[in-house]
Each structure stands twice: as structure tokens, then as C-alpha cells.
Length: 534
Image (cartoon, rainbow, N blue to C red; front, side, top):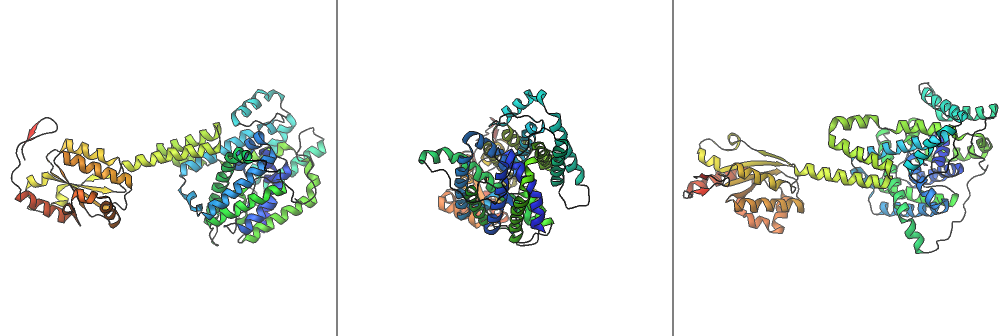
């Protein structure tokens, strides 16, 4: 039942996303049939349904317009090889590290592009496809006076059916009902509207591909291939993660999923299909309808193949406006309104990253949007880490009773929480300007789990800045990993092993003893321009 239900949902979407990709509708069906079966068998998710998707359609539209369908086939094979390489290299888990604002931004950008990209078919215009979104939108807007009211009526009917059908207690998808109603309107009323045309009443058969002329062709297609591989991998793995949260069955294997999707994208071009990914909506339908094993994905492909064999002649009358209506509703539902609200309520910085990714997706392309989003999120992460939780511990909490007041003023204790980053050095320089009488500064580092080279340099800067101001750096509670790093690099030797303690209490006892034994210091010059006595 999971596979059959997924096939019914996939039928109109496969046609619609093929049209949105700028290719023949049959390519969408062939992709769903072949890629769906191959990925189900070799992939890493037992319930994943693979086929054409909106995100892939957005990239494919530009590639098809620029290179043509035959080169898209070659780029798809290259993308599949890249995905297999990523899976073999065990890089599938990296998708979990893509920041939430970035994924939200490009998902919402894709939704906007799909929606406005269907205005051409919604209005019944027969304009040439544009490689880029904004010029294509402007072209459609300038020809809006040539709109076909029949196509607008058909698309509006399908949109209303999809919206209201969702409230009815039935498993039959509203998109399929809208498709049938729209086709009947065209046939019975003899409306003159663009249709998808005839689909061969036959199964997809393997065929040859254009010859690889030279290395220049590979170099020409490497960027589109990388874009297809990146987006296909991200969307498939995100879909698999969503599927894991909906089912109690076996969880997915990220690396195997990449390999399975790669094999599917290598095989599909030989059957006239286009690059595919795991489809979140169809996967969710499969799970809700009872899909639990890989067999559901295979049944989904078999059911689509039988539909092509029996009902293909009827597809000739399907109006493009009906597919436009389906895609418009789908795109609106793709918009993550809750995520947008959450980011707005959370932090302005995360919302800005999401908004930046969203705008770059719309104005330029998906790959650049992900790159820009990752750079922005990385810069934000570094900024947050540089603002580490640095808290001065009050004297009453760390100094035992009986310690002379002048000694407590000469020893300052700071607690550092989280990783050490380069932004910390400046914080201590500012602190010393405010409290120049401090001779020992204790850093409680028990809650610093690790330290990279950047943090090491930061700690070294702190040490030298304190040293120039006649203040000794003291470390307490070093974690084994951090201590080993300091030993290997020689910084621990510079600080002095005698200035490293297991606990803050032990450090204070030892430093108090040093102050008692030390002779009074001469008059010293205050770094703020005054004079003070120790």
C-alpha cells in the first residue's frame, strides 16, 4: 500500500517537475520508474522514494537551457560518480553539519522560484524558457496582457481542488483528482490550451549516449555536475533524516544512501531520464501509507510502469496549466513558515543568514546560495565562539577565609566555558587596563574540552600580553587533551609547569604563599597613567 500510494502521488509530480525542468514530460516518468527502483535497492534508507524534485528542477532548468538535454545526461552521470565517491569516502554524515538557517533559506528560495516559474503555464503563454529566474519573470510580466483565460481557469480549478481536497477523509491525492478534472475540462469543452503532448505507451528502454568527445567536454560540464551532485546529496540525505523521524524501522545509512543515489543517477540517463533525488513528500506518503521496507520503493516504480503502459494515451490531453496549479500549491507548502517564525524569534543573526541564502537562491543560483550561506554561517559561528563565556569569579567564592585583602586583590580568577578562540586575548588586555594591580591571573579551564591551533595562538597571546604587564598567567583544571597540546607545542614550558594546577584552590594556596614570601614591590607605574603601590 505504501508503494501504490506513493506511485499515485508521484505520477502528477513526475510530469510537473519534468515540465519545470524544461524537458519532455516522459523524462519525468522514466526518472521516477528507473531511479525509484535503483535507489530503493541500493540506497541507504529502507523507505526513501526517489524521483524528480522541485529543487533539482530549479537547477536543471538552467542547465537544460544552456547545454541541452544530451549534455544534461552526461552531467548526470558525472554527478552520480561524484556521489558514489562521496559515499565511499564516508562523507554522508557531513550533511548534518549544514546550519539550519542555510537549509531553510535555500528551501524557501526554491519554493519561490518554482511558484513564479509556473506563471508562464498558468497564464497560457508560449514564451521561450529563460536560463535565469529574474529575467524569465520579467519576460512573463511584460506579456501578461496576452494571457489565456481558459488556462487561468484550469489552473485555478486545480489549485482549489488541491487546497480543499486535503480536508477530506480520503487517501486519494488532490493533485491526481485535479489532473483528471482539468483533463476532462479540456476534452469536453474542446479548450484550446497547451497540453503536455503524447507519451509513448511503452516502458523506458536503454539507449546509447553521445560520445565523450574530449576532456574539454568534461571540463565544461564539471560545474553543472558538481551542482547536481551537491544538491542531490543534500536533499536525499535530508529526506532520509526526515524519514528516520517518522518511522521506527531501520534507520538510514548516509554513506550507502549517497552510493545508491549515485548509481541511480548513472543509470537513469541511459533510459532518457534526468537526475533524481530522494523526495521528502513522496517518502512521507510512503511511510504514512504503511511502507516499511525497500519493497515499497520497488512497488512504486512497478506501479508507475503499469500506469504508463495502460494510461499513456490519455496523458496527451493533460493541460500544462493543470501541472502549473499543482506546482504552485506544492511550492507554497514548501515554504517553511514555522522555521521562518522561529528564526525571527530566535536571533537576528540566524535570520539574516537565512534571508541572505534565500535572496541569493532567487537572484543567482542554488549552489552559490549554499556557498554564501555556509560562509555567512561560518563567520557567525566564529564570532560567537570568539565571544566565549568569560566570567570573573568573585573573591568570596574562591578565596578561603583569612586571606589578606591585599592578596585577594592581586589574584584574579576567571572561568572559561567552551572552546578557546582568538577573540579571548583582547578581553584580557581590556581587563588588565581596568585592574592593573593584579599580579596573578588564574584561568579555570576545566570546562574547556578542546583547543585548536587558533585557540592555542590566542592563549599564547594572552600569556605574552600578561607578561608584558608584569602579570603571571596561571592555569587550573586543564583537560588531558588540552594539556597534551600545550606540552607538544612548548607553550606549557613557557607558562611554566609550576603555574599549572589541578584545582583553583590549590593554585590560590600556592600563589598566596608566594605573595607572603615575596618582598614588597617597588612603586610601579599604572598603565592608565597614574601611580600605585603594591
